[in-house]
Image 1 (cartoon, rainbow, N blue to C red):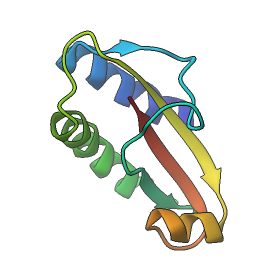
Image 2 (cartoon, helix red, strand yellow):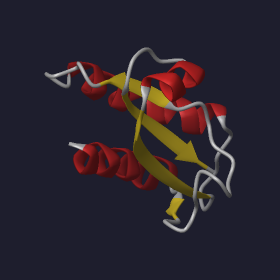
Image 3 (cartoon, rainbow, N blue to C red):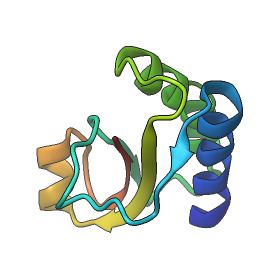
Length: 99
């Protein structure tokens, strides 16, 4: 599921915004927008589907990203403590939008 979600977000960024994927960008070395957080208990994936249809567009618009800007998308597992600091509850996944 992580690969499909990531590809969906990449497609939006490239097709709708003209951004350029740079897979060398990392969470530690680049700035990023507040991540989207999803609990592991979301078995049907509905929350992920709905949020992934709107969140990337909001992030890239509000971030004033322009055609040709570099970006990367990283989806990683986070434990309950880290999820709490990111604004989520319980363990799950966080989608980071790097710029």
